[in-house]
Length: 283
Image (cartoon, rainbow, N blue to C red; front, side, top):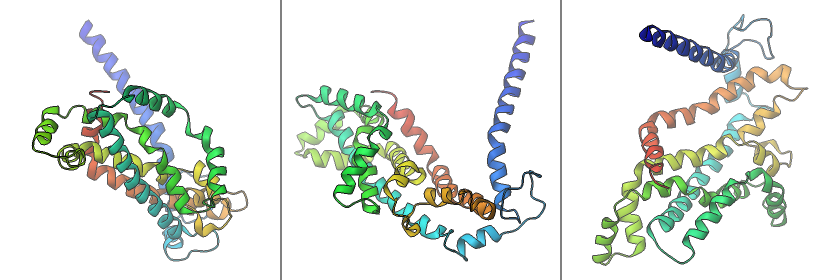
C-alpha cells in the first residue's frame, strides 16, 4: 500500500513538473517561431507562423535602418559587458581575499556593514547615481555605464570569500615563510586555486550589464540610437507606432542576444556549479 502511494505521489509530482515546464517553455517557443515568421507584426490567429522567412535576421545583419541598428547596439553592449566583467571580477577577488585571508582592525564590522548595504535594492540609489554622473559629464557615455556597473561590485564578495575560506591557510603560511608578499600570495597561490569561483564571478559580472535595461535607459537618455544597448533598442521596437512593423525583428533580436550567454554557460557550466557549491560551504 505504501509503495503504491509512493508511486502515485511520484507520478503526480512529475505531471506537475511537466506542466510547469510547458508553461515556462511556451513563451520562449513563441519567440523563436515568431523570429522566423514571414510577417512583421504580431499574429494572434496562429501560434506557428503560416509563412516562414529569414528576413528578420537579414534586416538585423544586412539592412539596418533608423529603428534597427542591432549590430551597433550589440557592439555597445558587448564592450560595456566585457570591461565591466574584467573590472568587477578584479574588485571582487581583491575584496574577498582581504576579508578571507587577512586580519585587520574593524574587519568584521566592515564585512557586516557591507552585507547590510548590499541588501538594499540598487534601484533606490539610481537617481542619486544619475545626478552624480551627470554633474561630471558621464551620462550618455559608455565609460559612465562601465563605472556605475563596476563601482559597487566589491560588495558582492560573499560567495567568493566563502570559496577562499576553504583554501588551507597552511599554503599561505608556507609562502610567507619563503618570503612571499601578500600580493604574491594572492596572485600565485590563491588565484590559481580559485578557477571555479572566478568562472562563476566572470559569468555573474557579465550578465549584469548584458541584460540590464533600467539603468541603461536612465543613463543613455540622449535619444541618439547609436549609443543604445541591445535592451534599449529592443524595447524601442515595442513602441506603439513601431510594434506592428518590427515585432518579428524584436523576437529575432531577443533570440540572438541570448546566444552568447547560452554558449558561455554551456562551456563553463562545470566550473560555474563548482564555484557556487564551493562558495556556499563557508560564509
